[in-house]
Image (cartoon, rainbow, N blue to C red):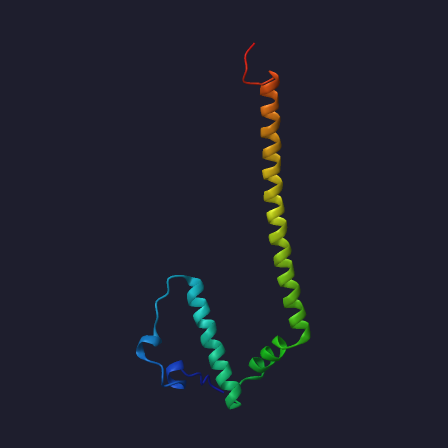
Length: 117
Protein backbone atom coordinates (compact mmCIF):
# COMPACT_ATOMS: atom_id res chain seq x y z
CA UNK A 1 0.00 0.00 0.00
CA UNK A 2 1.29 3.43 -0.89
CA UNK A 3 0.95 6.54 1.16
CA UNK A 4 -2.24 8.26 0.00
CA UNK A 5 -2.16 11.27 2.29
CA UNK A 6 -3.72 14.35 0.82
CA UNK A 7 -2.99 17.97 1.51
CA UNK A 8 -5.50 19.79 3.69
CA UNK A 9 -6.43 21.97 0.70
CA UNK A 10 -7.31 18.80 -1.24
CA UNK A 11 -9.45 17.49 1.62
CA UNK A 12 -11.15 20.81 2.35
CA UNK A 13 -11.42 22.95 -0.80
CA UNK A 14 -12.87 25.85 1.25
CA UNK A 15 -9.41 26.76 2.54
CA UNK A 16 -8.31 30.08 1.09
CA UNK A 17 -4.79 30.64 -0.17
CA UNK A 18 -4.02 32.85 2.84
CA UNK A 19 -4.80 29.95 5.15
CA UNK A 20 -2.49 27.56 3.31
CA UNK A 21 0.71 29.13 4.63
CA UNK A 22 0.80 31.30 7.73
CA UNK A 23 3.67 32.91 9.54
CA UNK A 24 3.69 32.68 13.30
CA UNK A 25 5.26 34.89 15.93
CA UNK A 26 6.17 32.00 18.23
CA UNK A 27 6.83 28.31 17.85
CA UNK A 28 4.09 27.69 20.42
CA UNK A 29 1.53 29.48 18.23
CA UNK A 30 2.58 27.43 15.22
CA UNK A 31 2.41 24.22 17.23
CA UNK A 32 -1.08 25.08 18.50
CA UNK A 33 -2.21 25.77 14.93
CA UNK A 34 -0.81 22.49 13.63
CA UNK A 35 -2.43 20.56 16.48
CA UNK A 36 -5.72 22.24 15.62
CA UNK A 37 -5.36 21.20 11.97
CA UNK A 38 -4.57 17.63 12.98
CA UNK A 39 -7.63 17.48 15.24
CA UNK A 40 -9.80 18.87 12.43
CA UNK A 41 -8.47 16.26 10.01
CA UNK A 42 -9.00 13.35 12.40
CA UNK A 43 -12.46 14.63 13.27
CA UNK A 44 -13.35 14.66 9.58
CA UNK A 45 -11.96 11.13 9.16
CA UNK A 46 -13.92 9.88 12.18
CA UNK A 47 -17.13 11.38 10.79
CA UNK A 48 -16.49 9.85 7.37
CA UNK A 49 -15.54 6.48 8.85
CA UNK A 50 -12.04 6.59 7.34
CA UNK A 51 -10.02 7.15 10.53
CA UNK A 52 -7.19 4.73 11.21
CA UNK A 53 -7.36 2.40 14.18
CA UNK A 54 -4.59 4.43 15.85
CA UNK A 55 -6.59 7.66 15.48
CA UNK A 56 -9.73 6.03 16.85
CA UNK A 57 -7.88 4.41 19.75
CA UNK A 58 -6.23 7.73 20.65
CA UNK A 59 -9.58 9.43 21.15
CA UNK A 60 -11.07 6.43 22.93
CA UNK A 61 -8.21 6.61 25.43
CA UNK A 62 -8.78 10.34 25.92
CA UNK A 63 -12.35 9.60 26.94
CA UNK A 64 -11.50 6.87 29.44
CA UNK A 65 -12.00 7.36 33.18
CA UNK A 66 -8.34 6.51 33.77
CA UNK A 67 -7.24 9.32 31.44
CA UNK A 68 -9.59 11.79 33.13
CA UNK A 69 -8.28 10.76 36.56
CA UNK A 70 -4.66 11.12 35.42
CA UNK A 71 -5.44 14.55 33.99
CA UNK A 72 -7.07 15.60 37.28
CA UNK A 73 -4.05 14.36 39.24
CA UNK A 74 -1.70 16.31 36.97
CA UNK A 75 -3.77 19.49 37.46
CA UNK A 76 -3.65 19.06 41.24
CA UNK A 77 0.10 18.44 41.12
CA UNK A 78 0.48 21.66 39.13
CA UNK A 79 -1.47 23.58 41.80
CA UNK A 80 0.62 21.96 44.54
CA UNK A 81 3.90 22.88 42.84
CA UNK A 82 2.70 26.47 42.41
CA UNK A 83 1.73 26.63 46.10
CA UNK A 84 5.10 25.22 47.17
CA UNK A 85 6.91 27.76 44.99
CA UNK A 86 4.91 30.60 46.55
CA UNK A 87 5.62 29.23 50.02
CA UNK A 88 9.37 29.20 49.34
CA UNK A 89 9.23 32.80 48.09
CA UNK A 90 7.24 33.82 51.15
CA UNK A 91 9.69 32.06 53.47
CA UNK A 92 12.59 33.97 51.88
CA UNK A 93 10.76 37.25 52.40
CA UNK A 94 10.13 36.39 56.07
CA UNK A 95 13.81 35.52 56.52
CA UNK A 96 14.78 38.87 55.00
CA UNK A 97 12.37 40.69 57.34
CA UNK A 98 13.86 38.91 60.37
CA UNK A 99 17.38 39.71 59.23
CA UNK A 100 16.47 43.37 58.75
CA UNK A 101 14.74 43.49 62.15
CA UNK A 102 17.77 41.95 63.89
CA UNK A 103 20.06 44.39 62.14
CA UNK A 104 17.87 47.30 63.22
CA UNK A 105 17.77 46.05 66.82
CA UNK A 106 21.55 45.71 66.86
CA UNK A 107 22.00 49.25 65.61
CA UNK A 108 19.56 50.59 68.26
CA UNK A 109 21.40 48.77 71.04
CA UNK A 110 24.76 49.99 69.86
CA UNK A 111 26.02 46.61 68.73
CA UNK A 112 25.95 47.39 65.01
CA UNK A 113 28.70 45.97 62.89
CA UNK A 114 28.83 49.30 61.06
CA UNK A 115 29.59 51.32 64.18
CA UNK A 116 33.21 51.90 65.13
CA UNK A 117 34.33 52.17 68.77
